[in-house]
Every structure is written in C-alpha cells, then in structure tokens.
Image 1: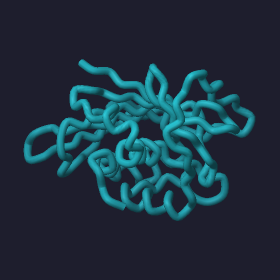
Image 2: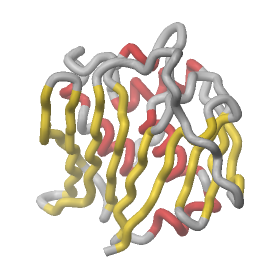
Image 3: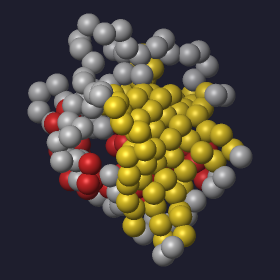
Image 4: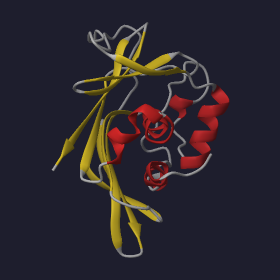
Length: 193
C-alpha cells in the first residue's frame, strides 16, 4: 500500500498502539493537508476514562504540512445500539465497495494500527481506511479534497463491518458513507477559511 499524506499522518499515531486504546472507536476525525508529509508525530490533547483525543502533526523539514485530530471513545457499540441515520434524499452515489480481511490487514500493517476491533470475528473497518480511500481513489471527489485551505471533519455514526458493502455518496452538504443495513455511517464536511 502506497503511503499517501493522509496515511502518513495516520501512521504518526503508531506510538499509541501499545494496547492502551484497544477497543476504542473513532467518533470524530478532523484533518487538513497543506503539503507533502515527510514525517509525522502525535500527542494526546485530552484524555479521561473512556475518552481520548490525539493529534498527529505532519512536517516537511521544519514546516507543518498537515494534521489529523482523532476523537475516540472507549468500548465497542453493542449489537442493540441504535446507530446510523436515515440516508438523505438527493445523494449522488460515487462508488460502492467493501474491504475484505486481507485489505484491512494490509492497511493496519501500513499505519501500524494494532487495535483488535479491526481483526477477527465481527471486525470493523478502520475509519481512517475509508477516509484514505476517499482521499486517494474516488476521482469524482478529487476536486472536493484539493483546496489546501479546507479543513475536513468526519463524524462516525456507525461501524462498517469488514466485508460489508458500503456506498460513498455526495450531496450539497458534503460526502456521506452509508450501508443498506445501517443507513448513514460516516458524514464528511469541509470548511474553507
């Protein structure tokens, strides 16, 4: 897997993969990519029981070239939780896909993510993997991501299972990822300064 700038920022969080946040799920991810990320390092911004916010900052020489801020909550959603939202009308479907176990494993190895919720029975697709795919592969959205002044925010509403088909769509308000089982799973918006 080729490390794009988004993946390099994600990999910057590898030092927090020692088991301390195993079982945590991402509920919000904000990012901005201003240039080429040569190296990335992360720090905890806020932390309390069952809650953590980590920022990975990318650099090229001494210049900051981007960041990711991940907000996580401890524990998986149980099977009885109401998750996802009804899918909005007027969406333009851009891509339909799923990630299998081998693809998820390759992503986890690339960014050095050891969280066990992404492996084994009932594994869920890493949210960063979906966002990296959007940044790199969904050509219809390329212009949407190219503005260097833009900050992007992804809200994670429901977990997508490994092997589950999901759809990436565009609306007037932004991008959304949805499944037929759950409805809207990820909502992505951008703000331009």
